Image (cartoon, rainbow, N blue to C red; front, side, top):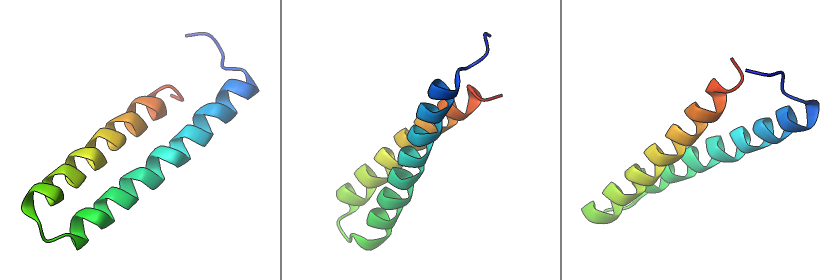
Amino acid sequence: MSQLTSKELSAIEDQLSVEQNLVAKFKTYASQVTDPQLKSKCEQVAAKHQAHFDRLYSQLS
C-alpha cells in the first residue's frame, strides 16, 4: 500500500471520529428505547458504523 498523504490521513481520522460518535449514539439510543424492533434497528445501525470504523482503522495499519 502506498503512503497516505497528510490530507488523506486527516480525512480518515475525521471520519473515524464521526463513526465512533455514531456508534456511541446508536448504542445509547438502543439502551433507551423500549420498542424491541426499534432497539434492534438501533443495534444494527451501531454495528454497521462499527464495521465502518473498523474498516477505516485497518487502513492506518
